[in-house]
Length: 370
Image (cartoon, rainbow, N blue to C red):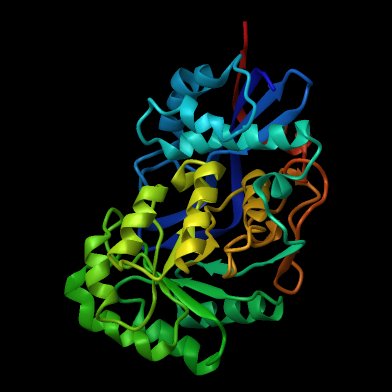
């Protein structure tokens, strides 16, 4: 298929509730959507997961606009592509900027699936008809509010609870949860809030029978995580440290973790996510699909990716209503009793809600092939 045009939209949506992690609170989501059109008129949609500030990674909404407009869109515009895996090669001369790359690559995957009249899940090699999902809860001001949230999500049937922690809101918080919910599948996400100076504190996590602790140490580290994993029983899951298959290989070889969180934007797209999936399956490493507070476009791609067989743990892909009063797809992503049914329509399986998209659009650029 030939990429005839690319449309880039800047979207601003207000989340239903503030979301707090160890490095800040956000409620307004400012992000990008990319739409590619092929020579048969198929439209593919992709979403950038970069935030407005570089607190998760070095990428931001502004840097993503720059990379897409000046480098990545020109690299694909007018090109004939037999398979989306080729996009990695087209971007091979561009260092990092994985979230920007994943934005346009995801749109090409969607267009490819529609071009071949298949679901994105099938195009990726997925087999599941429904996926298990968990929920991610930000840091709350008090434990009572956190416990109330957990109860609501357990009542809704979510298969796993993830809570954010940071120094001062860790041991006592997890202890309070376990006193009320001793058996609920529970994990803690530290977002790099600790160092090896905190080993004794992190050892205390072993008493809570956690599924994992996610990224306890520095965001660019695998060495200290290997040191820590040897000293604690709780499985370490790496998130921010993993940007590629090579990062995955090195982390597993030196024992930095027992679990990998795969985020499409962080690793540069669906092709690299598939490679990480296959390698972890070969090495017997459990993986799950992480979330980045996506709208429905990115959420739909996470659903499709999670249909691959080695996504053995519930991911963060909750239903649209967890985050948005109105999402930008129709129908919205719905979680029922902890499961999302994989859509069967071509491509991402959900239709963009153009009325909502136009309402939330604050800027727009159109690029056409000569």
